[in-house]
Length: 345
Image (cartoon, one colour):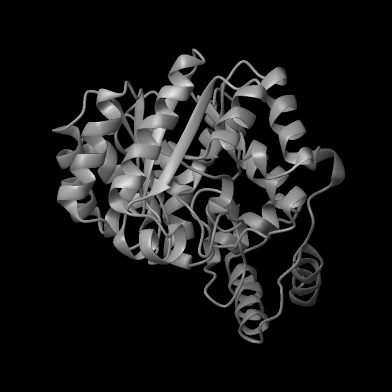
């Protein structure tokens, strides 16, 4: 699909994960990246896995330094610089993350950023590890980091308050070059910025050519849904089953006339490999019912369309699914005639 970088895993974690990262690195032309704590064995495992880039990280917020890392601020800087230099000496691209950046003392964050920049880091990733950023505050933080490094900036946002994709986009607006995303937003706790949301926002709302084959986004989402066994919510942006579904009579009638009336216009179902659907239920109007009847080979009069619509609304109000079989039954009850088979074909 043209995805630029694949962070394939955490090679030191286990032998199966090391093998998975190695297999991915050998199987794709995309830049592959291995994750590593600021620990020598982690960095060595990532290098040995054959990746193109190593992403090293260390906690920088006081709460994580004290109660998770059990390290001082200076120890964090020293280990970060050492590991960045290890990756550079191996001839690989290096990314550094000050973990929990959005809860880190700003003066200390700047100190860390300047230290790893002097060590030759290629990328600085700013992670909103606990999902506490808001778009305007996150943009301010990205601008601050940009003032203290010549490295390219990457962002990593979490969705604890439903703001991950918005924060990623605000990061771009503030000068970030790259965002870390996951298909269907899968990730720790409430998840990460969703691949499909960030790509389509960049493409459709900002008119940026990402180089991603967007027509395969729905296919990718369904594949990840199947393999992860994590269902996609029906109302999920871009790839949910209802993303391009219309039930309301006003909406459906407008879309039949001009899809731009009740769809974004800048993003069509065809762009993401999906299809438009007219759903019948308690909010359905005559336009959708007429279309479904005609598509099913019926030739209804206006009064018959109204009669079938009444049955559809009543059926839907009882939380019943209005299937094609139900439509056929309603049509027959009302006495709608079918067109001859030779006409329909």
